Length: 135
Image 1 (cartoon, rainbow, N blue to C red):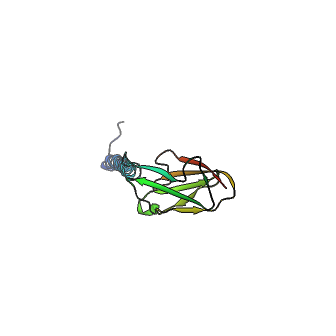
Image 2 (tube, rainbow, N blue to C red):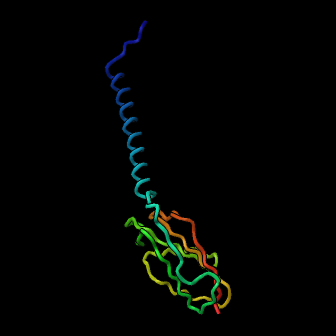
Image 3 (cartoon, rainbow, N blue to C red):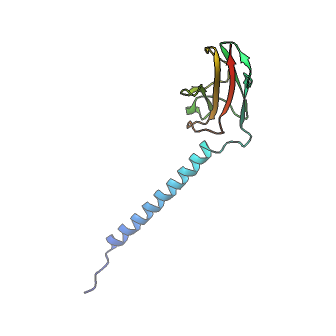
């Protein structure tokens, strides 16, 4: 005996196919939007540690100045970049505004690491380090 296909069975399969297709397209579209929003940075984005210079001897508090090219700092929820600053390999502190930082340090050799991070806290470029001595 041959099974009779009902309209309900055909429509059910069509509905499932359409819903999976729409879901798949939505996931692809979301992925492309997130890629564009968070990872499509201008290739010329750059930063440098302006002070202190590498290898110098300075007094405390140390004045850390970072120059930025083709980016602005701000809060991540606004879609702007920010800096992660680490002193002597310690935990990174986020900095959301462009200003000279005054960092009190004990006498001795120190290293400060600076990382330019995007809105989702991922590094946009390799971090940079400056080595110096506090008298």
